[in-house]
Length: 438
Image 1: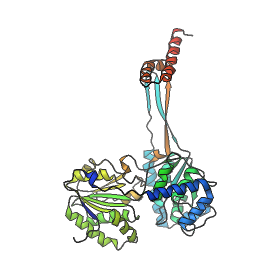
Image 2: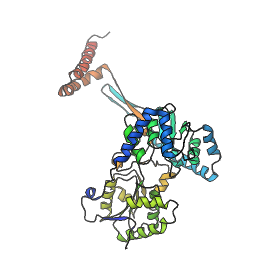
Image 3: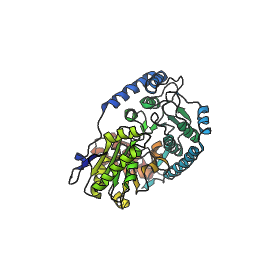
Image 4: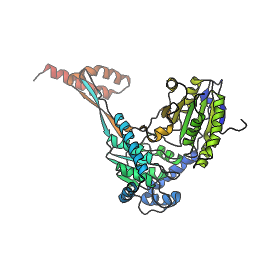
């Protein structure tokens, strides 16, 4: 082909994949901008939110909170087909996360020292739902339902308003369906600041979850410590590993499904078949012009569209593990076998009939996934994101006494004499009680 849509990267024969595969570009601008916005919100509260909303969203709202009446109206006037889709998706997401929520008892009793774990939901959670380029009612379901399943007392939602000052009706309808406690027409880094630090109107939360643009992701990084977060969920990513059995039209369609989220994302094919690479490029050309969001998709492909040529399936898995993508699709003759070689991905979709879009909406798994290679250590949003686990320790006098010798040895090795003394006192008391029964 004289022209390729995806930038070709030939890694055949390359052993150091990590060095050869371009890393995500570092950009200090979102981080610096997010810090400035967070400082404004922290200092200015509601007045800062109003000014920032006017600056970034082009609307002036007296009150950031969305009226409960608007929520009810959005659901009542929703299209019947959309409402049915919301109901089915919500049921699938709830079923999956309820299965995930089951906590196996953790208890060990070792010679009179008994330990167990107590699991509790956080008191208040903040869910961020993007807006601007599109409405994302599915993200309402994905963020709110796990919090509700976890038993969170108050679930708060922030989403940016349009120029008319209103949050997208589809987003409000989903929030109304789930009975979200509070909804605020605030977006961007300023919403993260409001949820983390609080304002006169918005009380701070314990955990913030949800995807967003580079500025939202940067703001979430900055507020870690003041609150917990799920993961760094930035611009959308998909890697598709495919061989000669993959329908090129399917591959192209799935690349475009993630690319249409807009600039900054990644859409990558990994294959050991040049004919497949060429066929996918042709399919992209055929499908691009018909897309409603073709401009956004082109912008993603221009900067993040790649086709990586490798020697075979094992080498493809090595590329995947370096990329650690948000979405991974294995469109090969034996996806289960290839899955065994893959270690790092936010969500994996097996075969030609399981596109990432299935997980984005209806499969029940969560679509809030780690991006920017953080799947090496981070996981999808889950029920446990909204829970704390507390270790509890109880000991009998005999149990404390039996542990004392070893604790003293370890404490002395670390030079912590008070630790040793605290257990030695108990051993002496326990032995004294044994010698003087009452």
